[in-house]
Image (tube, rainbow, N blue to C red; front, side, top):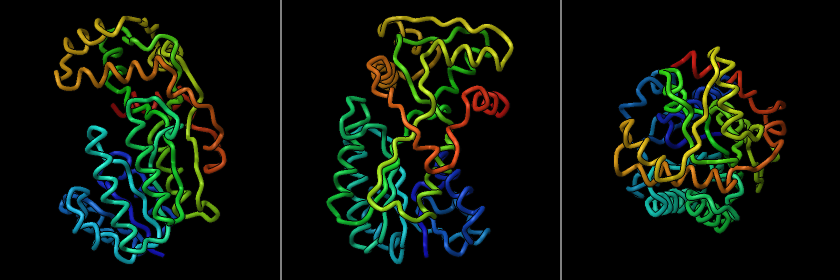
Length: 286
């Protein structure tokens, strides 16, 4: 059996590959990357490195050739760009007669009003339309997305948010990577949907947990969207990203990530990593 992971040099992709290598022989693992030179370390370990660019469909035909199980890791960018890129990947998978597609989606993707949902809804539909067996890994929010806020708190700033009482099912990327690896290597995942969320928490709750980890009380500053935008600009967030970070807060405020689930336990045999333990890992590493 040959497994291929796209985006394998990215933050999530690299964790998926490392997790797979614990149980899968390197000879059975391939990666598809835009810049193969960035994956030389994997090649040196026996992993097959293939050039695959979601913007160049012709590269995907060879990248996906002979693959039994494919993990499409969602790309970065605006919804329109990602929908186009993902459609290219799905079409190439169908041309290559890939036997199984796993895809990193978003919680409640088909019904969600989250700003990122259109990408995932369209991609899930494209995969279903191929008739290829699939598994949708509907990921909640990566705890690593909060690293700038965590570092700000460590530097003495408050935890700034405009999310009000919106809840998030944060989990570390390693949990999501292990879930993806479990689906790629396990049986019985055909045409499955996994809603992958940690315990739902409000901003005050994650800030309190962070305070316990770093040993000081963390003040939470709840602001409106305009003030949040001004604060983000003041700490150096580029102008073109300001609307995005504000919309993320809005999506959280509207509870688009408040999806409860025990699907991590189904795939990993354990819940998501407890928030304090996960925060401690991030604080230690950063």
